[in-house]
Length: 411
Ligand code: NIG
Ligand code: FE
Image 1 (tube, rainbow, N blue to C red):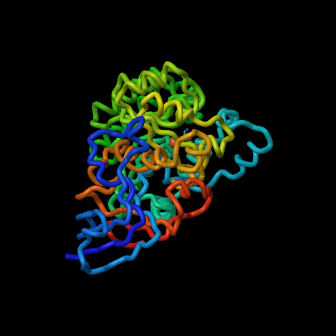
Image 2 (image 1 turned 60 degrees about the horizontal axis):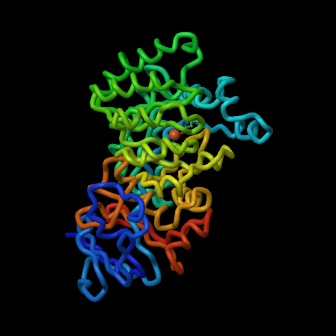
Image 3 (image 1 turned 90 degrees about the vertical axis):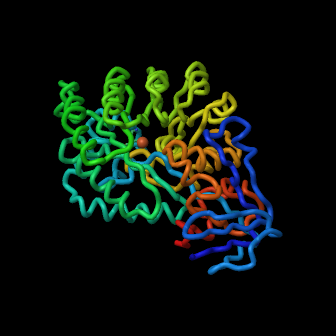
């Protein structure tokens, strides 16, 4: 049996959580860690851990982690990893003063990416997405969600979902797939929105169910995209096909998306740049996870989510990258953690919990990843020799990881 022993770990972080629910409030910063610890992996699974005094003396492979922190890999619970081309010209337009919403209304934005995707083969999409996956894994991502939503037609939505399925089959880290056909209304449907929704629900969704192409359903519930009533119809149709909801809302508007997600028992509501007190209160009392995506407001120069307030009120907060070509062309979870601390007022410990165990709950992968617990996958990170865990978000824009392990193997 192939075994790996990591010894002399300066601190084994986010260990022995054994939690059945996402962390909230004080739990976000008071999680267990063990100073001067060991970790034993067998066949890619966490087998044992504890203080060095109890470490086994032998293993097939031994790694000395003197001076280094060991933490669970990040769980990136919201990405649009499969896309074609790039949109740096819109980035330049925005620098010159055009807003993201104005670009959307002019037929750019998501529709621009959809045009590019329609002209790109399944093979090339797959190759490019796998390259991105390798890159984010090297930066610490150990489980990921990937959305469709740059297809926006029968053929292209199924194409992107089949690419995601192939990534899922070949990825060394767990992947969850989300159907986001309701990402934007294609231009030709602008005068007959319901026809587009009918296409999504009556034609595409049955194929998704038949070919098992998605785990979740998502809608961009915003004034520039889908209304609350439209979102409700789509969520309910998804549910009827066994897909739980993970919804984009409150990026630009408070329009009832939060209440809807609570009523419809969504797994998560994502973005949350714009949240009023009543919405924070309701979200805190619900079991819906609130996912902040701070690299989007960073890239778009928008207000950041009120993370401190949401956490203090008791919202179960997760953090994800939103990796996509329009509002976050980066899947770097270390930067996301820094931004959550710097711009949303989370403590380093809180941001780390949001990016690991709570992200795992946001993908229903809490039995496999998100903490150092016996029986979970040995997807973990070893930092450089750093003075404290706060050094991770503090040294923003840098890669503080010395080694990344996936299924007990160094990558
Ligand atoms: O999460 N907000 C909607 N979707 C993405 C952006 C998509 C794009 O601009 O291509 C997001 O920010
Ligand atoms: Fe997104």
